[in-house]
Length: 469
Image 1 (tube, helix red, strand yellow):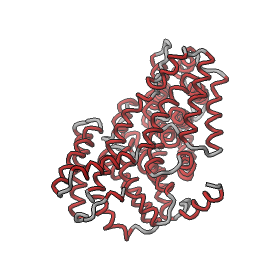
Image 2 (cartoon, rainbow, N blue to C red):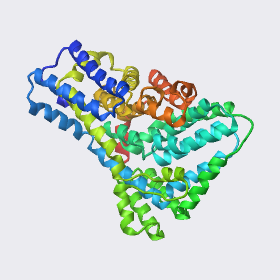
Image 3 (cartoon, helix red, strand yellow):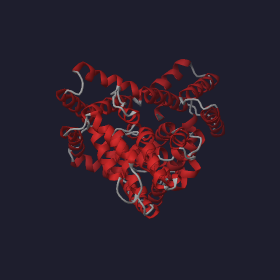
Image 4 (tube, one colour):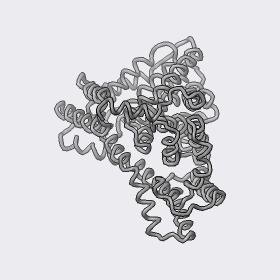
């Protein structure tokens, strides 16, 4: 968005004060008033419009800034709609249910905490939603934890760790798509690059939970109940694996995310239609309204009833508003003035990576909103990565390592409030055991300090030429 900056930049101190005042307004409404993020972001837009008018900018100029800012997120918006369609079609075809069933089978073995982490990670990748994973499978595993007399704080830490592994690595996740789209990096290239920090964090977390797991095994009636409910839904079939195979094939062959998700959704819908899961008219309607399950288990119904374009409107609206606010920050010169004052000190790969990580963490702590931590930080640092000769996929990875997974560790954040309520464990109690969420920012900072796993921009260009792009 740097092309939006005005001819004359405001002073650095003035810019910092305006930025802090805007963040303070958003923080107050999210933390104290407990408002949905849309309202304070809209109020912040009003404040920035007033600031721009005071600086004698025309409304037309400011409006152009908002429109241009929002326009940068259109790729993400289109992908979000496709994700909603994919989820509903994968529910109807039984693809997500068979993945869940496989995860539940694993949960009956030893190493309860480690398996809890692995199961929620698998379901998280399948669903692409940390909230849904924690509110369904997570709640079931918390019940099993009680029957085993295992520490609820440790179990909650394992659930949160697994759920946010899925939120971070799933191609269905809105934060994963947002980070890659804002920074203009291919979705699957972004996920592949995140493996450098995510896989070590996963392995270390799994090992830590093995050591913390109790030796005894108790009743797993709740998991058995979930499996019975999945069977009753009558969605699971050998053909349910086909959409997953198709998506993996497109991923391996590096097809564009939009094409991959679109074709996979059509394949899943056709499979569900030919199997007679729903009438064709009702089946195509799920693309907008989502899939609804009808079993005797309310918990399983909640688990399987989701998806559709309509379900993505909350995310789409917050992305548009946040990017419009970002456009105003740049159009009024607030962020460009701050960036210009520090750009000399942020020319190395180390300084840029560390600054990105701490900015994303700071926005999470101050505002408690993971979308804003990704959007604002991503927009602010893109040009700095270019100047530091770093590929943009390094930026998108850092946004997730220090943005997405930090939100559940902040007690007043959107994720923190939701998870503590659903799991029945306060954030500060499960925080020491949310190893995956703690390790990701630590690893990205360590790699930033050492320069390990950071891809130079020149290497990316050479790879593109070699592949014929």
